Image (cartoon, rainbow, N blue to C red; front, side):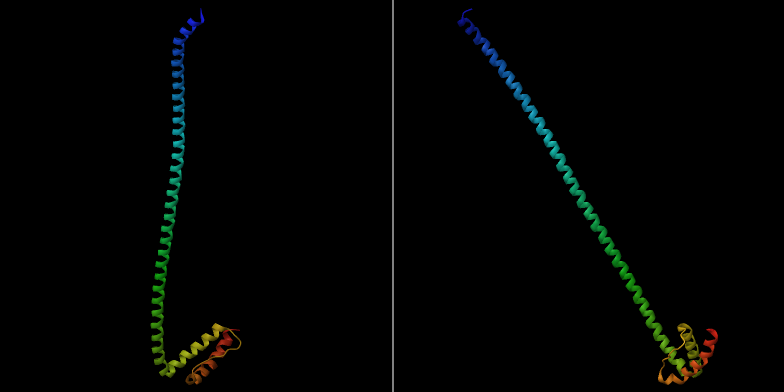
Amino acid sequence: PSPAFVMALSDADVQKQIKHMMAFIEQEANEKAEEIDAKAEEEFNIEKGRLVQTQRLKIMEYYEKKEKQIEQQKKIQMSNLMNQARLKVLRARDDLITDLLNEAKQRLSKVVKDTTRYQVLLDGLVLQGLYQLLEPRMIVRCRKQDFPLVKAAVQKAIPMYKIATK
């Protein structure tokens, strides 16, 4: 065949080849686009998962922190309630002790007027004091007006103390 004929045939073939190449390029482009889409989707899902996990951790930390704060507040409230209860008990005890001391003062002032009863009380208190201290030498302090009664109580208590502590 002559070169002009080959050329003329070539034009139709060239058109076919161009169409074929265009279809091939288009298919390659579509495949590449699908590949890019798939990769973008995968990266999106990975990033989304990472963000979700990060936010989940933040939320969990937030609630753990809140839980600890609430627990701390509960402890503080319990501590305050316990302190209030203790103070109430201490006030009540203080009131009772004050009442008891006042009553003891009143009774003692009555006992002091009855010398016989007062002497018996002093005898018992001096002896009890000696037993409590268990010392070879002791000093007894008393009111000036009670000195003779206390002296008598000490003189009665010494022999009993010596016998009891041999």
